[in-house]
Amino acid sequence: MKKNYIALLMAAVIMGSTFPIQKLGLINISPLQYIIFRFGIASLISFFIFGYGKFLESFFLGLVLSFSYITQIIGLTYTTSSKSGFIVSQYVVLVPIFSYFLEREKISKNQLISFLLSIVGSYLLTGGIAGFNFGDMLMFLCAIGFSLHIVLITKFSKVVEEKKLLFFQFFTVTIISVFLSFVFKIKYVFNFTSLNSILYVGTIGTVLVIFLQLKYQKKVGSNLTVLLFLAQPIVSSFLSILILHEEFTIIQVFGAFLLMLAVVISTLKLSQKNV
Figure: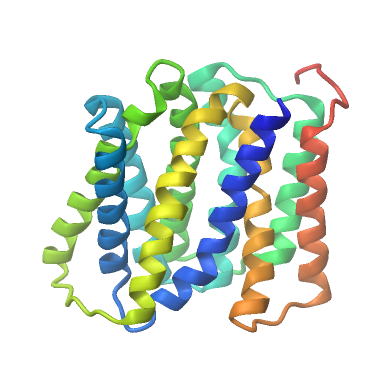
């Protein structure tokens, strides 16, 4: 079981590292173009290493992932980054809902405590939300998409080998993004910083992360997985200080502490009784 925890925490740490790196890579480049090359690279790598895989389940995962990223990109143009960060982080709370209806997975008492801590912690870390607009609604749809994607990974990986759920998932995101780039008439721009960022995020931050999820998520369940993923915003915030020289308040630091506490509590055997 510890091996599963470590693998998923590693995935969370990698995901956290992608946020400041993506921010650097998005300078003077369209977010849609970034997604095209990110998942295009992920498609090529997964194809040459794992082959085509299985279409139906991978395609459906790709549709959900595309929906999540597209609503996030559009939503960011209508709302602030702090509001979007808090709203999207609520996918943590939505996962148990999808998990119950799709997997009949109930949450334990210590997981319930962790979910409550995650709401407070993410609110303090991101600055919360004031006022609700169209962009915020899109961000909430994005959170729904990410939470559904996590639960479907658990569900599909129980019946389909993990390596068979990669290529068509990434390729679907790529094709949909290419189509939208023509719709929105995106101009393609290249620079060295963006290229390095895309290479890291497309390989380590996409192929490796999704592979780890597919391989180990099914062994611990969606609810515990998403709580372990609370390490993601903590790592992202820490690296933003180091790489982007962003400043954080005492309240934000306390929010990060609550998220760390939620991760620790979720892995403890405080109670095996479900609620």
